[in-house]
Length: 510
Image 1 (cartoon, rainbow, N blue to C red):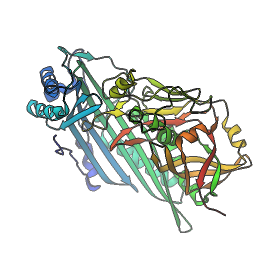
Image 2 (cartoon, helix red, strand yellow):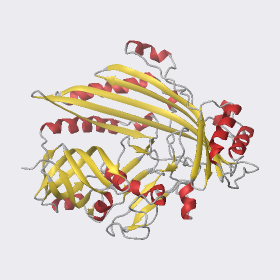
Image 3 (cartoon, one colour):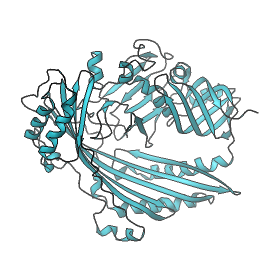
Image 4 (cartoon, rainbow, N blue to C red):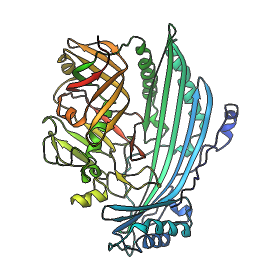
């Protein structure tokens, strides 16, 4: 397996940024261009043709195996970092390569190379084939091209046509407005990323599919000072979209949320410790649903009997008004995909319906094991990794209550509005999450702000104890990234306001 590094980093000093308008330093074409049905389009520019695909797949299955696929990727990412009005970092990252997988039952042989010459691809195929002992897989006599994909992340102007000066103008404007928003702001850091990633999947069953996947993220971090005390917080936006994503409304929200989340910390105090009702705010609180519950519903954990949900299909796991979905079809969502990384169609998967666990999230291996269709959740970080079941956009549907009704129902508890980090034991579902922003609920009202709070519990138990769900679902637009087995993929998540009847709160005792 080739492990050479072919990443190309280019740094630009603040002094050199002035000349950036006259260069294409941060803009390299990655557009698909004119597509021809039944042909290799994007990766033809790298000399990849049907003959290379067939030879590589044949070599991958030469020693046996049930199935093989090739995953090509070309990714161009551009970064700008602005701190207190000065560009202190600007760089580009380019990756290009192919990963080759051979599947025998539920075992995987895998290799990758950054050299796309026919000889290098053949050698990598032989590396991946080393696992194959038995199996009857064969390469299809001809390819069928999946040419008509959904258009879930159309961009008005491809990122390679957006000049760096346009991005820089937005960052400078945001920087000025952040300091003007509150005179306690002493430091502001803005991070801007855009990328275009081209992928092509070719499999031994004859499928070939190409897709171009854009992404952008804008992050604002603030440091504020009051009476010699400093606080820091942040807010970010992300989408599979072009520059048109950054509307005035979103940019205003970026500033308001980042500044308000930071300055409210001056008045915040730790929450009292103990068991109490916890209300999760709509939107980003979906991190709890994703981490503590969603991972346990990924089929590989259940196939290996390491998830607490491995024997729960068809059984009640929540109240009848709880419904949970994972989907990849939300237009421009960070977790949206037109096709998964195994070439499978992508739709909506109902995980929990009326409180009953109805499905896991499947890739091709787990779907074969369970005798069901793939759910379009076979995802990988890059061509250097084999796919596995991963979430896309995971959220809970609206319930029968209102947010006001939920808050009024709590005599004493906490309201969690912003989480930062946490730890989860996926098998058992035990978790600890850090609440960056929140409020006390006292006598049915939001009172003083709180900070430095941990909530500790068990995901499946928390799901059982969700006893109120509001009708205000929000899909968060933050730059969420999911980690699993050393791989990171972009995801989305959401939640209506929900009440959990009891969670352990790690605050301060009186």
